Amino acid sequence: MDWLWKFPTMNDDMLRQLKKSIDEGFRGFTRAYGDGIESLFNPLQSFLIWSEKLLTGAPWPLIVVIVAAVAWLASRNWKVVIGCSITLLLIGYLGMWEDTMRTVSMIFVCTVLSIAIGIPIGIAMSSSDRLQKTVNPILDVMQTMPSFVYLIPVVMLLGIGRVPGVIAVVIYALPPMIRLTNLGIRMVDQDVLEAADAFGSSSWQKLRNVQLPLALPTIMAGINQTIMMALAMVVIASMIGVQGLGQPVLKAIANQYFTLGVFNGLAIVGIAIIFDRISQAYGLRLQKHREVVHG
Image (cartoon, rainbow, N blue to C red):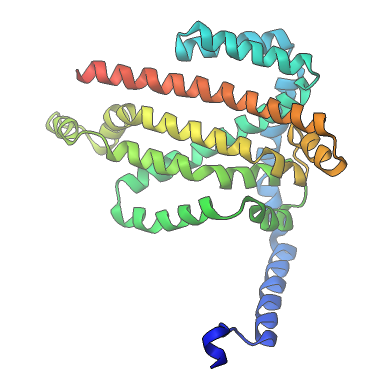
């Protein structure tokens, strides 16, 4: 009757052998192809270095003015503009400006990559139910997998540094971009699509001139979620050498520096709020514009 109380498991030797063979196979793959795969990401490393130098080298008043201008263009709300400006000034006053700019540059690169990868996949999913059924379980796994697990294969393939950190962040932050692009295009009114067909629009013209503009508010929500998830990975990515606000938080955890951890944690929150308010305000304006057009 022991089998009723103790779950039957694989023989210990067999399980150990299975794990060993998988580990050895992956190590062999990294030894054989790791250098080649690493060279493929050289353009990404150059893009990362360029964006970091651009933000850390720019005068701080210029950055504050640009962020305020973007906030105004997105929201047309002085409260949002003043809130974003005060947040940045506080971050600089508390001595976290350079780390913040490094973090922002990483989030910028991760968001650009997520958009470049996520929107085409979302468009492809929206036009094929079979592809949607295939990709959705993969996205479920990507969203539920513990974020630390992403670091293991990336570090084994590419080592420690900016590029592996960015790849891990993109994998973690990509699913909302794909899902909401797919959802936004599928939610476009069928009557509008039939009208486009009646005018003789090709599939490409219909996608470019009708589906994507109407799906843009939902796609903006996907960009918003992608940025939030990328920021959530900042501290974890710092474990493999990504510079920015995550490294002081990691140092504070290791050395029990309470104020260092809290201040840098609040800076991450501040950056998240800035991104969130700007992207949400822009998405809301697009939504209102669409309602006016259809109204």
